[in-house]
Image (cartoon, rainbow, N blue to C red; front, side):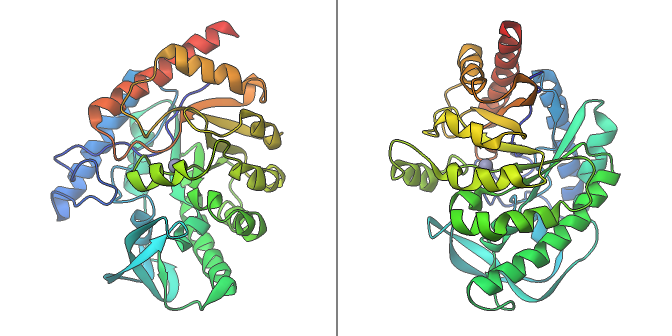
Amino acid sequence: MFATSIAGSLPKPEWLAETQKLWPQWKAEGDALRQAKADATLLWIKAQEDAGLDIIGDGEQARQHFVHGFLEQVEGIDFENKVKMGIRNNRYDAMVPQVVSALKLKGRVHAMEAQLLRAHTKKKIKFTLPGPMTIVDTVADRFYGEGNEGRIKMAMAFAELLNQEALALQADGVDIIQFDEPAFNVYMEEAADWGVKALERAAQGLTCTTAVHICYGYGIQANVDWKNTLGHEWRQYEKIFPALAKSSIDQVSLECFHSHVPMDLIALLEGKDVMVGVIDVASDTIETPEEVAETIGKALKFVNKDRLFPCTNCGLAPMSREVALKKLEALAKGAALARGRV
Ligand SMILES: [Zn+2]
């Protein structure tokens, strides 16, 4: 009961990449970089186990960014000529690569990290991939055409590639494959209309547990500012959860602690496992186990205890290592406290 895990990303050590950045520059190249990525992955496997987490991830140490890490292995994308684009409905600008021809995987994307993870922990392992709709929102299109029709076509093309990699990850021994779809919270109507379909295409044929992580984004200033415009009650999930409840995806992750998401929205996810965000990623203040247990207690009113999985609100990538480590410990201790109470 209450098996704990992180949403996905963890801070990169300063010998691997620039710290506290969303798109950090690597500190090495070639074989030295490959080795450094593997070393950092091992380090975080051990740290998650020591903190007492139940489901272990790779901490996304081998990818520069949760979307672009995948895109680097896709043929048909021009990484040389990045362009500035407003992403998440123009919430902030990012330098994004361009889709210039038909998309195809160059080969395996995450074999190294997944196999390392499987070889070095006996616990269940979770692996994250970007969701198709979020990819479409983090890349510039010069091939699939204008408007919604082009976006849907491109999303389905990415979904097919994601599916290939997801099936290979499953064969590597991954127990849970999670697709990250922060864009679902931005384009609610499109998410319910075609985003969920694209997601299901990405998960097609998987027999391992499947999950989707939606959130209000990393704890960067642009997101904090955006959240301040959302008012007292954040009801975005209300528009997407019914579509997800009907979908084939097994688990849904949402942010609960220090967010204005009304807890009762969880009830819309009947029949799904719920990864309840109990750790704030936009604040360096370490949660107490009591706070974590309290958030779990509140969520328990709307989801059965066997379906509740305490998690972080989002990735911890832009935080300091020290803070992230303490937050992992708080997560595990808080879940243990809640377990004792139920
Ligand atoms: Zn997130």
